[in-house]
Length: 118
Image (cartoon, rainbow, N blue to C red; front, side):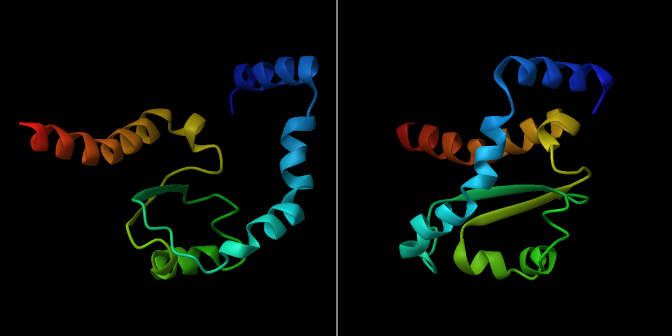
């Protein structure tokens, strides 16, 4: 993160506080309880998961092995996984690459619908 980016965050959080980001973590236990009825359910819509190879979330709790072994695809069968250079804030670290990955995912659907209407 550049000094300029850090300054932008500091300015925003100075105005609004840091409550919003902290609330995500405060609600983790509640989120697990709220989503418990769907434990084990398959996600059947197409999805793309973009991760940074140095993201602590990928490198913790066996996540990397789970993702790379195809374990995640057992729950999300139509999943495309992309691991790129970067950490947790890929949208800032690799903005062009992340945009390209999102657009390539969306192209899968626009091409099909255009062909179907042709």
